[in-house]
Length: 138
Image (cartoon, rainbow, N blue to C red; front, side, top):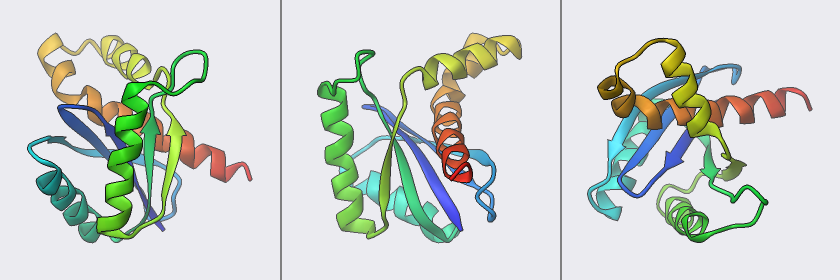
């Protein structure tokens, strides 16, 4: 069962997918946002290509656990995904995933330009892997 992980931002969407057993997350791409229709089309294409059965999207909560304006945008976009693609979507607390992604890339000594290109994909990996680890414990 493959699961798609999304890190949804205003300009980009980081995308990761699980292995067929649902154990590990691999980053696959970063979608440059153009329009809602084109963004949904890209996600749908990826879901079909990888035979995705469900989606997990990062929910950007504030540090105190409340939902802010960015959370509302993500929830609205996920509602559109549900309507268009008709797959179950789970929300996953993504606090500090981008920080963790930056830290990992700094430790790997990647240049600033390379980090900028892949940070959203890395954040999607962290979101999806956190979700996979949580369901494996159940």
